[in-house]
Image (tube, rainbow, N blue to C red; front, side, top):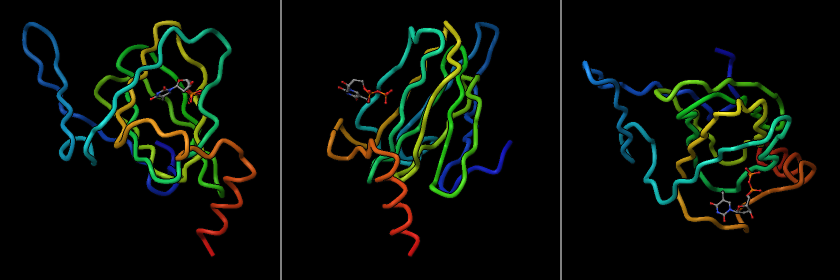
Amino acid sequence: MANLPSGCRIIDFSTRGDERGSLVALEGGAEVPFDIRRVYTIFGTREGVARGFHAHHALNQLAVAVAGSCDVILDDGQRRERVRLERPDQGLTLPPMIWHEMENFSPDCVLMVLAEDVYDEADYIRSYDDFLRLAEEAQA
Ligand code: TYD
């Protein structure tokens, strides 16, 4: 696995498997390193589409490809790394101040995102230039 930008990590979830199949349980404060206030899913993404293109001021999130696969590009203002999500038993943390883009969605991809807070447009940084400026200020 690539050396991820600061604060980003892959979390391996334990799978409870038996003769019936598999089950992954995610609890806030346990497998998920924050309390969960919102869940959203991205699915039916059309071929060639890229999404995201933002960072958050304060929000913590965790992304899981519960079906299919996609790539997440992570950028902390210094470095960019690409991570492939393709397992329902693996999550990628998306901490605050990480610019992220998602692309290469398989047609069957269901990307589930667990979020620490409700939707708040004011928490979004949607301009890459603003993001770079804020990231630089935070380093100083
Ligand atoms: P958008 O931020 O464009 O998605 P992405 O980051 O994947 O490119 O969100 C698409 C629309 O959905 C936009 O109108 C905002 C809305 N939305 C909500 O209402 N609640 C949510 O939790 C999220 C993530 C988006």
